[in-house]
Image (tube, rainbow, N blue to C red):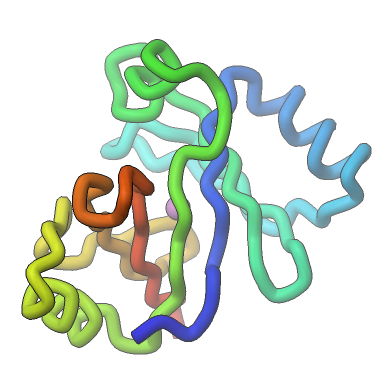
Length: 134
Ligand code: CO
């Protein structure tokens, strides 16, 4: 169902400080930065081999990541698995009785198709399915 881990999503309060840590101190290459207004988030991707770390900073307190930070503080926010056919993967998950947040994919960063699986269905881990843009 899944090809590999695509990225680890990390919620941060200070994006520039987080970039300094991951890029300069940890030596990961920053490959993409994008503001997704409808999700209330500024996201940055850094390369770790063929996988990524995705840093997420909220555009305001009343956004999903803003609320997450207020409740839990900075840290690991979600795990994203890569698939080559997200519609097929979502159908298979649904057929297996896995509760989805997104029944149909939406457009994520870098033109990818993404959907979130309900954390209650995956041992309290917010799980994202990603089909990268081709
Ligand atoms: Co993500």
